[in-house]
Length: 395
Length: 199
Image 1 (cartoon, chains in turn red, orange):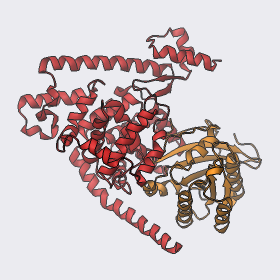
Image 2 (cartoon, rainbow over the protein chains, first blue to last red):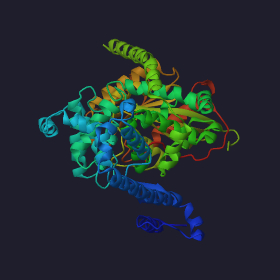
Image 3 (tube, rainbow over the protein chains, first blue to last red):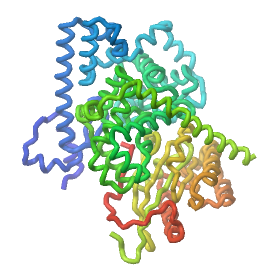
Image 4 (cartoon, rainbow over the protein chains, first blue to last red):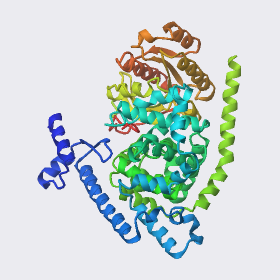
């Protein structure tokens, strides 16, 4: 009924943001899939409802910007960057009342989203990246890049292989300039931490950091603070042991927070890490729409790695009823995939992630991790031995 | 929508192999008929379904397309557990990927379902001028290890449908006596094409 031409016309229309569609054509168009570019230049496919949601999100982003500006007018520019506040909620008891009040305000504010123009500055400071950078000489990044230029390692070969395969088609990332910047960040990091080297998945994370941060150097420091301070240890090293631990912790929390889903999936022999591994390693950048991903990252950089658990649980929770009537692994995956790809409204996800899922204390999560670590190590070790015995047989 | 006298077979299929050998491209060529020069790298694994109808049976594939980087190896058992068939993929322009493929075959022989049907695919067969692994080399290794061998090209579609048809045929043949890894079912087949992960 509608050829490609009319789809192209529609997508042009939506780029110019037509906020309200007449109901008569609305119903007709609701079933149409259109392609459009989102705030960060990614081409997304969705129906008219998705486009409308995205426009509403844009409007909310503007409103949220006004909230930040007015607070800045009240409390002074950069009020949120004062160390007593940005170092956070963990130090609650030692804070003065005004600082405590500011910290609480900031937490609420961040959960509602950081305006895109402020993201580079706020992330850089609140994540600890600024502090990390300040402990080394000013020229650290440039020296690192110079020192690694022309060096070939297994990591650089893999990075080169993945550059054109990282968000292909993106108007900046998929250009020679974009590839070169991503390459420098990833290669630089692979030399900074040889235990991590290069792990597939980091390409997507670094690419999104490059899009948000104003400079390549800041993106590099964000990647560093993420891997070294924000996330659990060893997520990306050698055998992904940290990621294995986190998957088990996630499984435990799913059983606690969404017992019906957990039981149903277990009966189907569906292992949640089949889908969650990618979420945890790419920090949702490959599954959620860009602004939704960045809203998750806003909170991640301020509140820490537990945010990933909250969001992963929320994705399951949101589709509880649908998931409970599935009989087949493929149906579960298809529901989750459809859900994540269409979560254009960050609020919808974050409300569930924090209000419905309820609190999970850092203490409790750490305990769970400690509990799972030995089991994961044992399993990985056994596997390693088995594979080694295969190699010996081969000789 | 089972036709009378026709078996419905649901089968789990897993693709394994070094990074960048074209696992995702092979699956996408089979499932969507399309090819992208630069396919997003797979993290963890991607899931696809596709239905193939043969005269003797209808096979519904649950396809797990896994990440190739060596460190993701530790996740692999989760994907090949209970699989009815596996395709080990290498890139004919990379000897390294062929060595990796052999390791996968060994691991599957020891660890996977004993009745697993294994295929070896030498992909990127269109890149003849860059070839590093000879056809005979692949064929010989496959023969010695009881694998079905094909050289494929996701780019030109060479042998891609053939690969999946051959797997389907083997599964159909094997199904009455092979309860593991295959579930007979009679639910209606909707949405025969589903994708996961690759946006």
